[in-house]
Image (cartoon, rainbow, N blue to C red; front, side, top):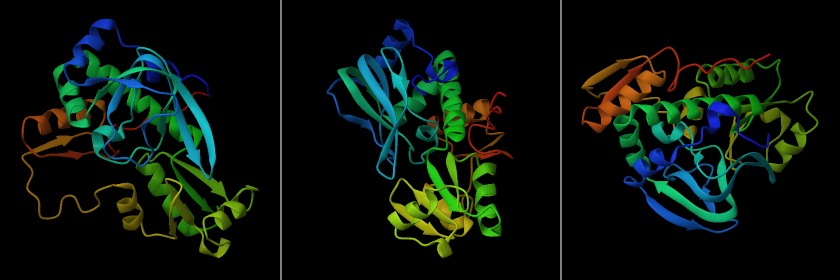
Length: 265
């Protein structure tokens, strides 16, 4: 895809950009500069002021352009608000300027301006849905006949993890990929995370910890606020609660951000 569609690529107005300036810093950019790197847990939220930024999925040495951000568009993912690692890189393809806003400041933005909050959260949710359909992020290699592979795929689907499935018996890339990452077909199901971490038939807890999910988050902790429902409204409420001091605990059948809408057609 050469353009990130509609909801995921909402152009900010000049007034909205001016509002955001109080939370960030304007920086000049150069061609090839990596603004957001896949796997990072501290990258800034960016708004393109001038120039262009490519959104790239880089896996097994193959870079795939998922979209292009131009002036008025913003770069980031839902994981910026949940504390998990990002799954795509944002690289400058035409020099210019960006407004860089630290993640903690982004949470303030979400709580301060309802209109911007709605735009940002809906874009993040749409991007997650697009990423899931495109098969970027986490890769699972295995056989559809394997109960262990099914277990991992169900976990990824249930938690709406952005991932791609590579079928051992049918995908001609499967064995070559396993060899490239030092694994064998007998090791499957194999998880490849960020193109470098390889997990051989991991437990659910091992997979969750690798990608940054807090599997033991509630143990021995006291919460000041419980938000029932982790959809866009629940996510916003949790971010708002955290900004005011309480430690919120979201409770939902679905993961952060809620259940993405099914792909059309």
